[in-house]
Length: 87
Image (tube, rainbow, N blue to C red; front, side, top):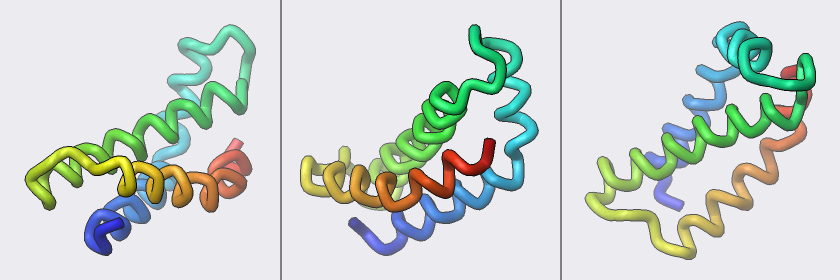
């Protein structure tokens, strides 16, 4: 994965961690199960995926390739435990 995009994703994770109260509000507003970890993780991964896709378009001037997406998935897997532990 492009190094600039990787840094942008790391920043998005830091931003998400620092704004976790906003995500908690979303969870309370839309989750059937109060404090649902899977719902929270879905919101966070969605934010990070959106950043990945947007930054690929902005920096590389194209959609991410299948290989880049596979790298993104591996990146997310390495962060999963940290993201789950936010809640």
